[in-house]
Amino acid sequence: MPLKLDDEVLQINDKTFEIFIRKEEIQAEIASLAARLEADYAGKEIVFIAVLNGAFMFAADLMKQFRSPCEITFVKVSSYKGMNSSGRVDEVIGLNTEIKDKHVIIVEDIVDTGITMEKLFTLLSVEKPASLEIVTLLHKPEAFKGTHTPTYIGFSIPNKFVVGYGLDYDELGRNTEHIYQLKGETR
Ligand code: 5GP
View 1 (cartoon, rainbow, N blue to C red):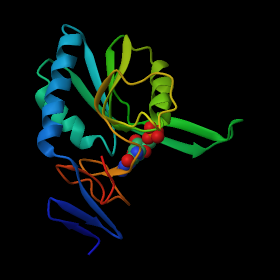
View 2: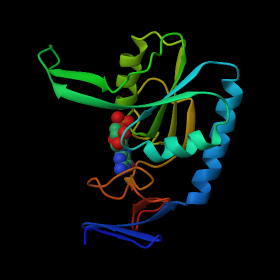
View 3: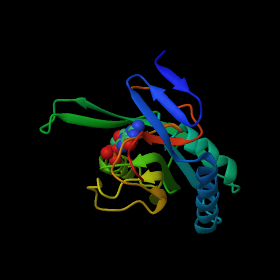
């Protein structure tokens, strides 16, 4: 069996994970992020852009707690070998919402090195939104190589691998309510 789920311990293939952030802590943090966003964006035309696959659960819970009118849409970021000088081409897949002159908030599960976030900023800026910010549930400051720290951060965590609540290990483990880390690692 590739995946064993008994709440306290998560076994995925060869790895054992234990609870790192409990569901109650996650939900409390999301409530305060939603309240901050509501206050900061009062009266503005907002589009949330959630980045699949990892952010699906965070986006759903954040939207349930965010009470002001808003649009929500989902994208994927892909990077493939192209013909340009750098050899790589990045694109945002699935953006079928007009974002020009709207206030855009990117919803991420985790900002690690920040490379994904920087790509999104560059690609979405071309569409001329009124503003562009990021809300991320998790941030690893030690791994971060970007220039702008995300404005809205749920939890700053050490540079260790986490899984659950949308985040995967070998595509498994996304369907949990807690966030887990490798057993034996300290917080
Ligand atoms: P970046 O390094 O560009 O900030 O993050 C790239 C992607 O790596 C994230 O969107 C996420 O999918 C994945 N990632 C980074 N750190 C972790 C982690 O600790 N666990 C899991 N499951 N994925 C991670």
